[in-house]
Image 1 (cartoon, rainbow, N blue to C red):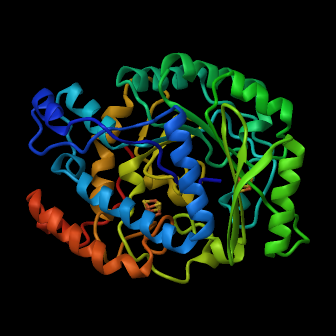
Image 2 (image 1 turned 90 degrees about the vertical axis):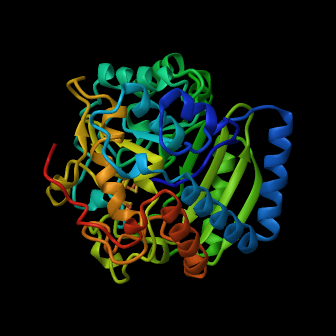
Length: 401
Ligand code: SF4
Ligand code: SF4
């Protein structure tokens, strides 16, 4: 399952990008992955502080992330740029996308009650993603020296087809050499040997989702047991452990790959995934949605969706799809600077949203940040000459491309 994260930090001067592209507003700085001892020490300090003061760190981090997003908004992000030069589209993508989410195949071995796979069972779907299509995506990312994350996740379990995963990760490593390669796994097929193999083909980050058995009820104690059991299975040590009343999150010591796990109480943590899981639809969305700005999502069949919640294999979402990369006629930059801009307009503001966003709480803002973030958002939209976008815009649904 998807766990939104950011990697790296700001270094590129936005003014240079303006000169190069002729854009009307400075692009936000490119965020780059980092390596080295200083980075590792600062990450360790950050994680330790988080373990000791989780609520304070979480609120601060979330506020920082929202403010960064607000300050990244430009007119180019909110308007389709069909006639723009290819270089402009590439720069807009490069400056904003922090995570490209893909599937190497369709299959997942589970059917979790809180996941849309409960509607579309993927256990018997052995379709693999076209290697040539993925190679094109990796090449396009390599062409902008992409240094953020490529994550194999979505509604498949990456390790149900290990060999194909290894091959695609190895291809990504060659074609987009500075990307941060990640997978999200349910850990069912994960062993110490598999972990080593993943490291050898170039994996940098692994998010491990720990799910209980059907007959188990979530408790802190059980979540700790699952985390300890995983550490034992992989032969690694738990570095940090953060607990809340509804989750246990751990990081683990392992040379060469950042390992983290979550064990959530899905009764409390579940979201309706773009209106698909209606037991989680009780509350309307509070804030804007950053996903269509920061993530670029590709299903195993080459379909681009606006966010991780929308999927191409469900009729309910068929009118929300953004593009098709399978033929090679469209680039990821065309889609991002094209149809996705219309979707972004529909979710950039506070206030009521249209389906499928109306009750989707994915990465929604916490209530105590609504007022301060609404204020900076209003100012930013004023600053970029689009105060009209402060109110909810037209419905986000659109006809198929
Ligand atoms: S393992 Fe993940 S993708 Fe598979 S059904 Fe469960 S939540 Fe969904
Ligand atoms: S709010 Fe809308 S755009 Fe955002 S994740 Fe949910 S369905 Fe996707």
